[in-house]
Length: 175
Image 1 (cartoon, rainbow, N blue to C red):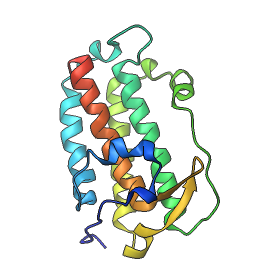
Image 2: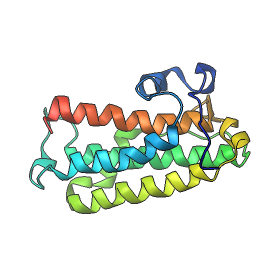
Image 3: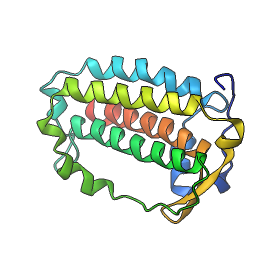
């Protein structure tokens, strides 16, 4: 199924909150977008020194490592939702509180190179999953955080969430 062009989801396929992420993603080739983000994102992140990854742009804000860790965690959660829905699992899935994940994960204690490797592994794994989906599976929906979500909305949200946080890193952290 690698030649599928998956159109951007309709607003009825995701919670309004996620529109800010989906709006950042070009329509059509979500698989190509997800694949291209691997090299582009890693190239930008590898330029950041180990010391600079501990910087915060303001008191109480996440460090660069915590931002990347959040991106990894969120991608895993959205891919899990996509998998469940693609497999026609109708069980409603709970939400998650991102701010509770950061202190529990202790990303600032982890080596930067390890987080980069983890990001790449998670994305490559998810890309393989998405490439294996049928056209029908991409359109399946479930409920997450008490809102509808389609498989394609989850994929677009992953790409848009990354674009959003990479922009934040550039604009607020200067990286």
